[in-house]
Amino acid sequence: MTFIREYFEIIVIVLFILSFVLLALILSMNKYFAMYFSNKRFKIISSYEVNANDGNKYFSIAIYNNNINEVRLAGFGYVYKDQNIDFYSNYLLDHHLPSDHKIVIHSRDYLTTRINVNQLKTIISDINKGTLDVKGMKTFVTDSLGLSTTAKAKQVQDQLVMMLRIDQAMLREKQREQMRKHREEQRLFKQKQKIERNIKIKEKTSGILLKIKGFFNFRRSK
Image 1 (cartoon, helix red, strand yellow):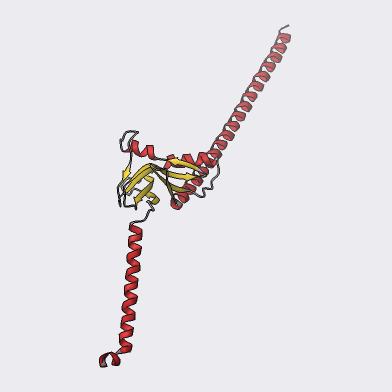
Image 2 (cartoon, helix red, strand yellow):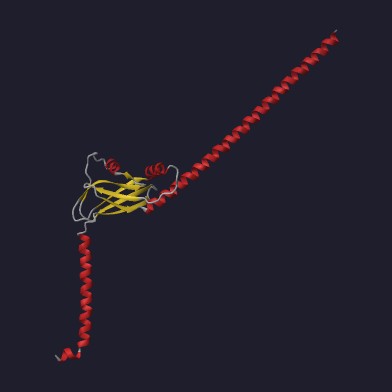
């Protein structure tokens, strides 16, 4: 008892610290188990990548199954202007799988797929109908129950905007070059017409002079 009385304040502080540490540990464990048993099935990451070996460019989608159960997929791809751009069939073709194959992601496992840059760019361009702005683009995954999860695809969206602007700049440059060639062809055509007119005028003039000369020669011969 004497020991407790002498060190009461220190004991209280130590117990308070231990209680705080224990509480923090319990909260962190609760968070861990809550995430482990979470019903949120998917974590989706979409990005733009460049292969350092061959320089090929592509978009990629990584789908992580956060659920404790395996998940069967029914579709995945992008959502843009309320339209689903589904690349499920493309994945089956790329991996030489039958069209009725069911893709399954096991618990705590993931799936990645690559998407052709020009293919997606063409689809977005057709949806935009010439507009360069690409806004609100998302990645989606749908399971066999019809439940969908979406995530922002900001990196892919920004890259598509850049690509569409480059394509438009190249198209304008091509149009300017075609107009320049057209003007040059018109100039050469007009120049050719002028030369031909001059030749015809000279021919006519020469013919008239020959007739006049022939007439005077005929008069002299008489």
